[in-house]
Length: 272
Image 1 (cartoon, helix red, strand yellow):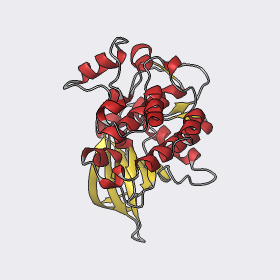
Image 2 (cartoon, one colour; image 1 turned 120 degrees about the vertical axis):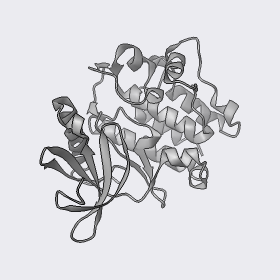
Image 3 (tube, rainbow, N blue to C red; image 1 turned 180 degrees about the vertical axis):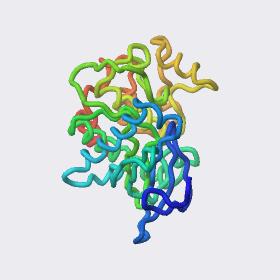
Image 4 (cartoon, rainbow, N blue to C red; image 1 turned 60 degrees about the vertical axis):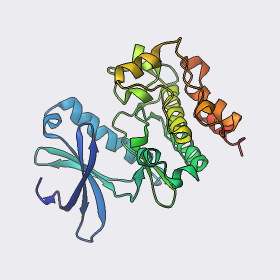
């Protein structure tokens, strides 16, 4: 990529994900942005292009008419030549994955703050008619001031009050619920499951199912005879009410899960 791109000056690249590359760039006023660029192979695929631009449209709609403090701000999207790109506001932050990996004090000292922020932003997304369907620590930014920012809405779909059949199963296996892995179905409870897995990791620095290979993790997730490790076995200091809430979010049977993030928030607000 040239140093100049779509009217911006590229200053550095940052770790991308999946089919996209990420760059930090500045405009003529020296304001920083993040430019997401679809890779050359994916740019030739109409489905990949549509999904890429769809993610930006969802972010724009969620931030209209008012910018949501926990959703990354969208600037614009388009083509530079034949290259699809998207411009987002730069967020000075680290990913939740980094905080978990290094057991950062910012996380351990503010874990309930982050859990509540994540629950609130997911409920907001649902209230505006979307499922995120890719909630994981890599897609959650934590600013130095403790504000959580949700990113990457490429897999987002319209919210339905019944199971929606997906054309394909995307996302990271550890955060995809059994019914989606097995039957390609998803509703609110898919995001609730992913929320629960993120909370589990924030509280224990472990996943409820662990293995050296993705296939091992997937097998444990979908096997009804393999229960998740109880959260208090990893961290006995987690209050029982909070442990029960998280374990209910990650129940294998969707009927045993919370049906709505409003109910998750209701029970979270009862915990000191």
